[in-house]
Image (tube, rainbow, N blue to C red; front, side):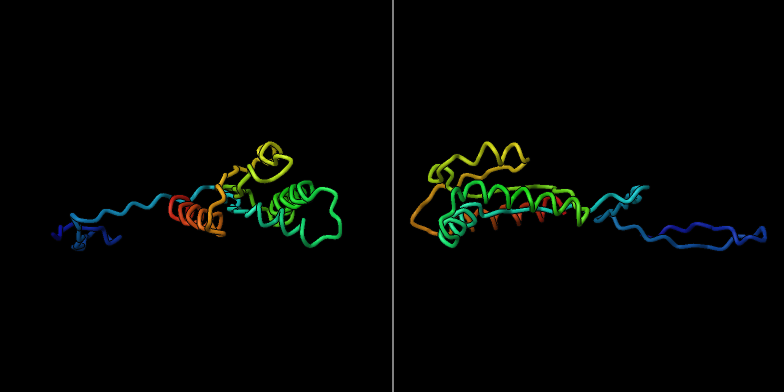
Length: 142
């Protein structure tokens, strides 16, 4: 329903102004922060695929577990140092019970949240969980 207001013209007079209000939708805009916040990255790692890729494609790897952890560490550091991106979330997906050396502890110390996806007949169970979590982050933390 329109509301009539009067606004000053600068010469002492006033002009009528019509403001339309909508009772079904209210939109509020917050002022942007004074200092520009640094951009963020969301990192989703299929740790099991990384681990088995290293194990199967490198000549006699001593411990693919250590190489995989080094890759995750390098990714996190590169995002911060070279791209200036803070990590909003860091998730690693695997059936951690099947991986030797137990990488969950070192990943936790790096700030990576591990998502244990139990191995099933579906080879892509970790991929599906990764996609679900990525969509959730997209909608809850735009």
